[in-house]
Length: 451
Image (cartoon, rainbow, N blue to C red; front, side):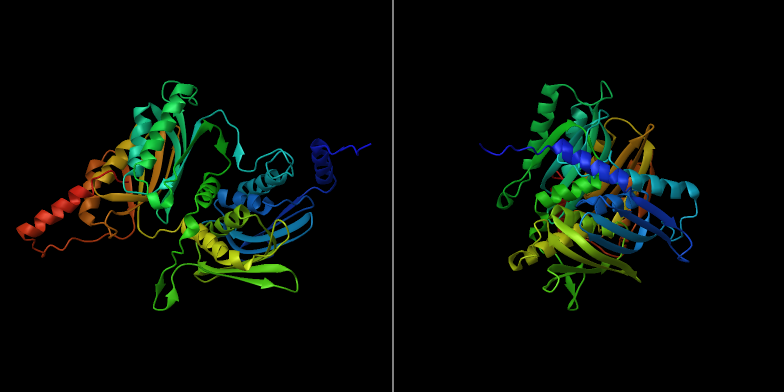
């Protein structure tokens, strides 16, 4: 008589819930131990791969800056200690903020969250009835965002939230939208099919055949817990890390420096990262390691002046170290996760009353003035649209001041804030008729569908 399999995933979940109740997680916010930072201590007896990322995501969602971090775990137990400040570099003095930190971290570790050990839940996606989600990945090119927004405007869709990243010639975007006629998620199956078809056509229109013309559109009611978390996953799946894009100036690397060594005595791989410090750096690194299915057993994070230092002791989820043949791929994956958010060019911020077709109009004006959008974040709340665009000249040069003034005039009904370098026109430069002819020819060419 054969053995009877009595395993029940519900029993497994019940056991994890029991452990959580018997040994509940602890969150301590300490404002006394450090003179210039607030110390946040988190420990739990119900550890799960990805839980560290959940905690750090809470911190970055609350706009906190991690200046130091100590990470350790042993089996099903973990403890994290973070030194944090607000955006102004100050300790957390507001009790409402401290209470919010505690409650949000507790929620991220609790039985009702996606990080609670379960074989049935998904960490990345939670259902919602507020809007329809569109996810795009494909080849980047000038004008893509303008074309995508024009298609959705033509199909009577209202964009509620949009975030778009570009890196290594690739683009990923997450768009939350509603049906203009109902102000609710798109319910018409025929309309959903039309959205997918037209957006796929737009994405494939500029495909690079050498990359396999990867263009994916996913449409359905739902939301992600964090749009930027989802963008990392989309770009990782699209393998934007295939190119090692690190620049070298004067013999020194400009981008992040990543090294991986195997520690034979303890059977760990040690990942060391040095790069320029910036907000959300730790979150981006953890997204990459989590997506690669590496488990962090110990970690150390510190800010040293303008530079950030990160060190992690990791194993693959099957217990193995980083294989020699995978070393370069893992390093490039980490570099890409760090680079995607970095852009030191021109930043444009707009604030205006929301309306259908607004994004289409704004991006069309950018395209007509030969600007390419590198990153964008657009949100609509209580009738107001807040948009942030990181842009550059389509030719790769710094944007001229005169072009910014032209855009200001065309967007004069909006509140427009400009931050970053601009190029002053050289008034003494004289152009010959032939020079003028060629410059206008190339300018016309830049009006081809562009971002």
